[in-house]
Structures are given as structure tokens and as C-alpha cells.
Length: 565
Image (cartoon, rainbow, N blue to C red):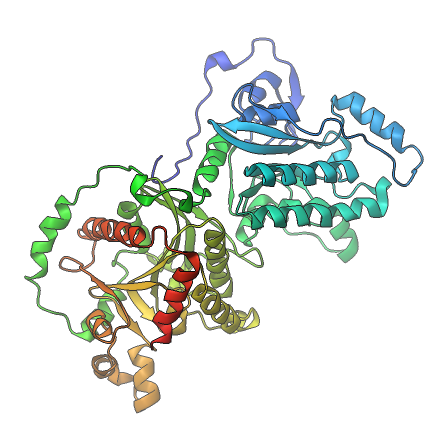
């Protein structure tokens, strides 16, 4: 598995082009294109890269090992619960046209040898509107997956509720959601892939309840359809409104997935969400780690004179200082980022996702400030907004569900203070993070790699152990703020830094941290690998220390750690 996901566009060969093509119209660009060429490209237009809608059988072939799909619940009969006139005829017409009994097909299959439940909504059948049979198939499949302890992947698309079934259709939203809750309580993975279009009651129920939610590029996704919204508010909708990309920006999906990556993405998710507690950390064999650079760099540390507190303050604020992403290259075998707080937005000041150490998954949370002026602007200089803390907490609760340890990298001057942060509840977001982190039943390791400023830093630093890089700082407030409040003179910041006890050495003496991580002469491009490899070794020791420990004891240990202050 590669460290970082690279998406390459493979050029078509001459053999892929038909000599006597059957032409179809692309729904995105409107051009007439060769049907065979489009099919060979996983139903993606070769002119505009637009995605065609995919039939059930083709979708299953994209992700299931050949011959492994076993369809479930084929015996469920469609009925007319409200005796709506003409409904039976419409259903018969849909069955004849599509060859399907209903809009949703589900069953068990293997994905690169791993068993999983896969369900597919097919828009050709009455726009995959959710009637009682569709709701029953979704619910029964999730119940059976819970019983058989299997992960579930649902490819969602829908025009919403099936109007001919009225209130019975509406009840399916609650029914499917309740089944998902039980599946989640059993510690099992439920993931959805949103395709074009996903709207109405499906959006407001099983489509948006995934532990991981993905979307295909350009897919229309929303509760009310764009036509209904335009008619209701009488306004022109913005460009790109209700697209998959729009939802990613606003924090409601974890990522956009390309069809060529679908199968390996589902396999990755199965592997990443298996409970670590089922196996011993000592049983996993990973790559052979070498620490030659670390040993060489260790010799340098004694040649550098100790830095003053003020020098450390200035040092951690340098744009050139390595970020968590730089160290993660050498700590984790691979890392896949997740996005969004499921409420408002995706805050780039906090990066979160799943990383692997020797093939074992851990949840990673990291403040990221930026390594260029443009990136600093994008990431708000590493000052999280409420949605950043809510994203981090969402991922930490997910880690608890799947028994994944948590590694948190802290590097922020503090939480963002601004009108919008107050409007969205900055104080509440930090307070809830502190409360929930204190009770997590998985090991939590927090590493201050740069500046740790006030409650904004503490919000993701409630760990069983807290470590600091040798020249990092951690304080109640910036030295400038401290001097301004106590001495009414921000110009005395240098003097304040020397009396605040903010260095790693101060905090180790005070019992606030457990370990000082050497920087081998100072954190920079030439030492990032050495620091990262040192952290890899020590993180593995930390994880082994908590192997087999009772979850309640892990949470109690963390409680007592902070209770001692």
C-alpha cells in the first residue's frame, strides 16, 4: 500500500476504440460518444470525464470478486400498501424494463477475498425511490450483516420517497436508521457511496449515516432537489450547489472516490475498520524499520547549546518547521485522510484520518499550520474553528467504535477567535472535545510538535500520555498575551516566556508530559526523517504497552492522569 494516494489518468489505447461504434449521448457534456469505449472506462465519458449512471450488475462487477456475489432477499414481494390506483402497473412496467424486482439489490460478496455486504440502488427502477420493499431489503440486510458480523457498503441513489406508498414510505427512514444504529453498536463498519442523484428520504436516512461516506465526482446530493429549492425560494442556485464537491467542502462526506479506485478503497476500509483488539500487536509483521539516520543525528544533539524559552517560541513559529504531515511520512506505512464534521464544513486546520503502523490501523488527528504563505491562508495558520474540533471528535469516537488507538499531533497557537467561530460555538466545541476525550476507551497519545497554545491546543491533547518535541512549547497563553494581561505591556513577551515554564524541560519537571522527543539539533527538513523514525519506534512501544488492557481501565488511567493536577 502506497503512503499517499496518486490518481493517474491512463490514456486509451487504439484497441479500446470501436471501429463501428454504437453512439450514446453523454448526460454531462451532451456529446454523442462510443458506448463500448465508455463501458470499458467504467462508464465514464472520454470527452468530459462525466460519470454515467451504472446498472446494478455492472456496479457489483466493479467491486465484487468474480462469481462471489450471493444475492439476498429475492423472495420479498412488492405490494400496494395504500391501494394506489395504477401502482401495480407501474411496478410491472419497471420490472419489465430493468429486469429487476425492485430498485435495491443486496447480498454478500468477497472484495479481494474479504467478505462484505454490498447493496446497490438502481435509478432505472422508479428513480430508486424508497418504498416499503426497498426499506425492508436495506433493513434486513443490515440486520443479517450484524448477525454475521460483516461490514456493509451501500451504493446510494434515489429520487426520494415513493409517493404511491405515502406514509408507509416515510416510515422506512426510521426503520433503516434504527437498524444502522444496532449494526454500529456491534462495532461493525457501515459505509455509503453516494452516486447521482441521491436525494430525499434516502439522503435523510441511510445514505448519510455511514461511518465513512464517499461520493462519486459530480454526483447530485441533497435533501430537497434543486427544482424544489428554486421554486420554494425563488432564487437562482449557485454554481456547483448540491454536488459531491460541494458536500466535501461543507464537511458532509469524507472524500470523492473515483470508480477505478472503488474496489481497492472498499478493501482498504474493511482492513482499516477491523478491531485491533481481535489480534495482538506483537502478531503483526510490518516492514523492517531502520534507524541509521536517527543514530547519526543523535550525535549532533549534544553539540548544540540549549535554546532559551524565547528562542524556542520563535522557533516553533517558523514556517519552515516540519508539520505533522512531514513526520507522518516516516511514522506511518500509509495514511488516508477523512473530511468534515457532518454539520457545517471541513476545517483544513485539522487533518484527520486513518494511518497504519506495521499494518495496524490507528486514528490520526493533527493540527496543520501550513508550509507556505498560500497554505497558511488555506489552513487559517493552524487555528481550528468549531468544525475542526467537531471533525476531530467525530473521528475519535469512530476510533473508539472500532477499537483503534488515537495519535494526536498538536501544533496550534490557539483556537480561532472570530465572529463566525463564536456564532458556531467555539467554546462548546472545545468543552465537548475535552469531556469526550477524557472518557475514550482506547489508548490516546498526544504529541506536541510545535506550539501548544491555550485551550485550543488542550482540546486535542487529553491523552493517556503527552509527549513534546525537545524545542516545542505549551502554555496557557502566548507570551505576548501573558505580558499584556499581567504587566500591561506586550513588549515584555521575551521576559514573560522565561517565567511561564512553557518548554518541554519545564513541563517534564512539572509532570505535565511523560516524554521529551529529541530533535537532533533542531526540527527541520534534514531532521524530519530522524524525528519521524524515532517517533515510529516509541509509538509502537506505547501501543504494545496498552495491548490487552481493559477499555475501562484505559479511560480510568486517563482520568486519574488529569485528576492528579
